[in-house]
Length: 303
Image (cartoon, rainbow, N blue to C red; front, side, top):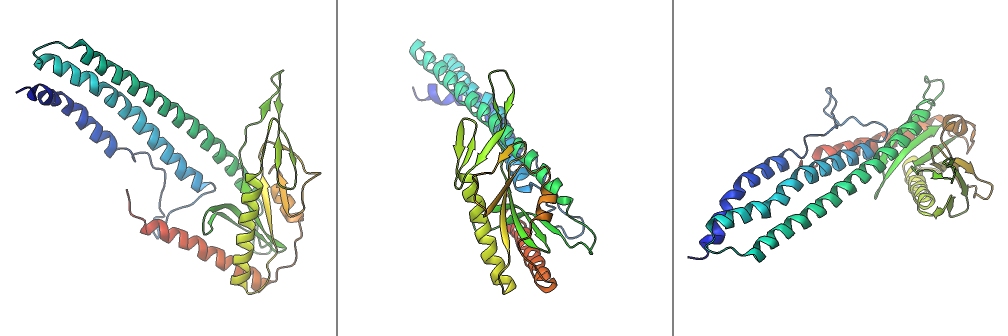
């Protein structure tokens, strides 16, 4: 029965398959998310959304790095089994198994490189969010100085990095991480020009950060107006940590900053006057929104 020559070599793949099952079962071993010991709600820190994405990226790197060698060896192991059970040696078939292993090795090498690049970008983004969040924390004072800062506020379609509530306005703070360009002498070129609809970096330009910040600002303004029952002054802020901002051609609807003195800049920016009842209503609405996000995480099925 010629088909046994192709079936029996599968026995040699069982150890590799068992190892692969163990690797898949352990893919979520690295998970930094923690829950409160008091009410079991997820504890959220500045940049928590990026922390979760970073955990997923590390899980992907673990899978690609561990499953890659297993899957790459599978054609060779099967080929060695075929050599034991085959009546005739077909060097074209053996060459095919070697070619399959080579292609799989190249594929998983590409995946691992992609995972490393993704983790590097996420770490840079997390570092920038933590830097801006730490600067915003400087706004928190005793009750006589009523400031409140929220992190990772969910909208209907995305997440706002930070929302700062002050007695004179509400600020939507979005953070974007970009690597400065290098000059011919090795020095950094970190000056960005802000226009109405575009950020001009050295060598490239972007529209998306300004669009996303305006979109988040419009959503929060409309949502707070409905919850507070009156118009709430809201302004968008785009933070680009590590960049020198040239805002001469910028429009006045957004504030583009480097983030180093963000707390003082927001404290000095007067959008209007928010009375105490409206201020408390805004805080209560945002706290309710944050609780809704925590409830969604609790009800989400674990994978």
